[in-house]
Image (tube, rainbow, N blue to C red; front, side):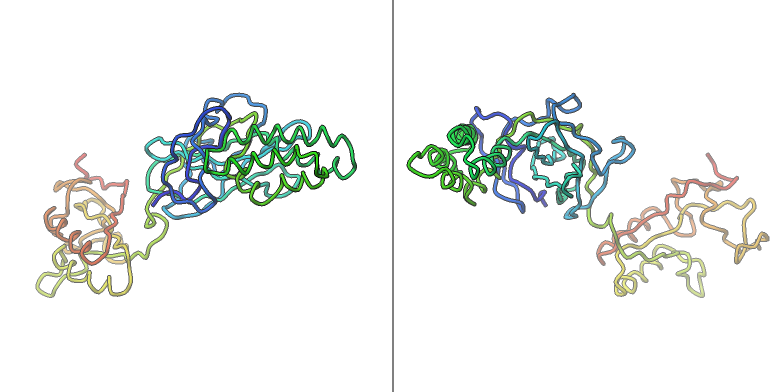
Length: 359
């Protein structure tokens, strides 16, 4: 399942390169952006626009954040700059094969907090990375000033000419057939001296123009955070319905100690109850020194089998099967039967041993 974002790598930082064909990725946040140089070269360096406190983060990035395939979660960061010019940010994901992209635009989570965030959806299982790119938004800055100055009649000729040049810069980064003519038409409208300045501003701020600039933003002063690790796992890693099962309890009157063979007969009933995972306590040989009896008593009789977590005896340690349960081949058959029923087997990874452990 691919990650669900824009169908490309990072938005453009340069407006002079021709974009190659974008990769095919399912999108849920908008149309594709062009394949462009990203801010990877600035990651970890000092940029004009700080990117701080990226979350989620585990042990300062020494351990990966975790998600499962199809899980949606938020990535956030503090982004700001000096002065009054507008800023924007986006999240860039890198897949397990090292391919950068897709990317998702971020939004300011609460006005005035400088905290930006975006929700992303985890893709195929594997080791991903993510980073936040922050950048100056010259078009948003110009629009803010234009909506103040043009209604007031202040420097209108200068304002619309500045906007036309910005739109021409932006159009240079839009592939042909992807809305480039929409942006160029907006630039021409800004220079149409036969129209009032207010009309020209409105013509450059239509939903069609906004849609193209949303896909292919004009980005200045791009700064990237360091990449952070993200481990994407299958859905079962997030939740499941577990059934604790002692194979030795599935005995018969003739053979009280159960085996993997007798335990396998119980698996259909477990599956019928709706469980996903069968959890087994340790299945290794059990020591005899200080062996416990029924109900955790300290005096064990000659027929008491002991506690499974007292791992290790002359018959073997953590790499051996308790002989009363069967052989490794019997265990393989037990696992295969569970798989046929849609069940998974989980083994207790017990890091303890009895004094009789052979190691």
